[in-house]
Structure formats: C-alpha cells, structure tokens
Image 1 (cartoon, helix red, strand yellow):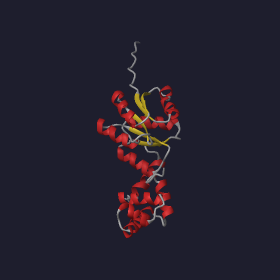
Image 2 (spheres, helix red, strand yellow):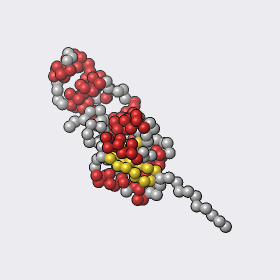
Image 3 (tube, rainbow, N blue to C red):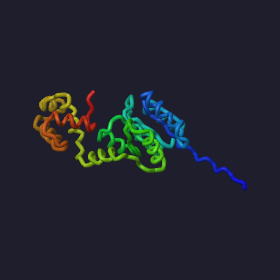
Length: 216
C-alpha cells in the first residue's frame, strides 16, 4: 500500500516584545518545546516592535505592557493596528491593575496574561489568539468587569487626583489648574464618590492600585 505524507502545517509565527532580556530569552524558548510555534522576531521597545513587525509579519505578538521610552504596550498595539489592521496581540504584564487591562482592551489586544502564569497557559493563549479567539483568564476578566462597572473619571478629575497624590491642598490644586478652590472641592467629592472612598488617602491608594495614576 502506498502512502503519502501530508504537508506540514505552517507554524504560528510569534514576535516577543519585552525589554527585560532574561524574560525575553525565556519567552523565545517556546520554539524549542512547541513544534507548532516559532518565534520569528523580538524587540525591546515599541519602536523596535513596529519595525520588526514590518519585516517579519508575525501571526501573534506577545507584548509587554510596560516598555521603556515614550510608547507603552497599549500604544504600540494601537500603532500596529493602525498600520497593519487586524494585529493579534497578547499582552503580558507583571501588573493586573484594572486600568492596564482596560487600556490593553481599548487598544485592541486579544488577550491579557500575568507573567507568573504556567508556560502551558501561555501556549494555549497563543493558539487561541492565533485562531481568532480572545483569551482573558477568569481573574483578568473579573478585574476588567469591575473596571467597566465603575464610572470613568474625567481628565480634570484625574488631574486633581494626581495632584492629591503629590500632597497638594485644594488651594494649591486650584492655583495650579487655574480654578477656584470651591470647584476643586467639587472634583474631590466626585472622585470620592466614583472610587467609593471617604478620604484622600483612600482615594490615592485605590487609584494607584487600579492603575489610574502612577507615582514615580
């Protein structure tokens, strides 16, 4: 009986975007243990990622959320999708802040994983995203749902909140923003209501945990 070998399926081409070299090298070893996945490119920041995508056209992008320079992971995904259309990006992050997850989803990410996940989870996510599915584990989905339920702070309220985190008084915030102190008090009250807190310390702590503001 004569048999013919069926043609091998093309591998899933993956690009790794990660600025920490040890993590990047670890992710690149997926090619060695999964026969249907090949890492075809890697980059250290958003600018390199766009250039590498142009050259290699990977099927799936593993994107770190926090990148050096003036372009983070969400912004890099936005730029990639603007130039190339349906880019399938899977965000990897050390942080599970609701705001980070929300920004990644807004940018068009197809999934979001924390970096302490098992390798089997990452491989499953890559295959799912490549097939056109979204991949948000239960923990990430619950945080995203909580974020979507909350009323979004306005740009002005975020600005006031950032200054509160710097320890500025209502009067100092008013001077900095060019508004009267009474208006600042209204913004502060709105912030307390939306974040479900009762004082400045709780507001700042909650905002940092949710990724609404960042303290250098």
